[in-house]
Image (cartoon, rainbow, N blue to C red):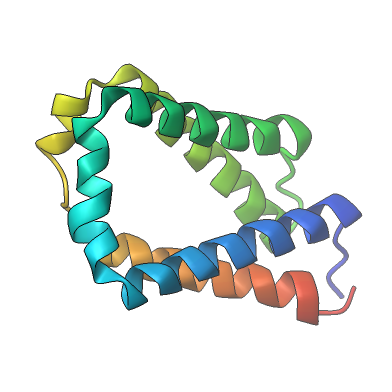
Length: 129
C-alpha cells in the first residue's frame, strides 16, 4: 500500500488543485492564452514578477520536498524542479526570446497540466494511505 508523508499529501493537494483549476481556466477562457498571456511578454516588469513568483514557488518545493520515494512524491518533486527551471528561465531570458517561441505548445501544456493536476488531486484527497 502507498504511504505518503504529510508533506507529500499536502503538496499533492496544493499543486494538484492549482494545476487542475488553471488548466480548466485555460479551456473555459481561451482568450487568456491567446491575448492576455502573450501580453505578459510586452511588459518586462510583469514578466520579471511572474518569473520571481514561479522561481520562488518551485524552489520552495525543491528545498522542502526533494523526495523521489514513490510516484506521488516523485511527481511533486518533478513539478518543483520544473517550476524552478521555468522561473529561472523567465528571469534570465529576455522577453523577446519568449515572444519568438510563443505559443508553441499551449494546448499540449494545458492537457499535461490537467492530467497531472487530476492525478495529484486524486492521490492527495481520495487515495488512502
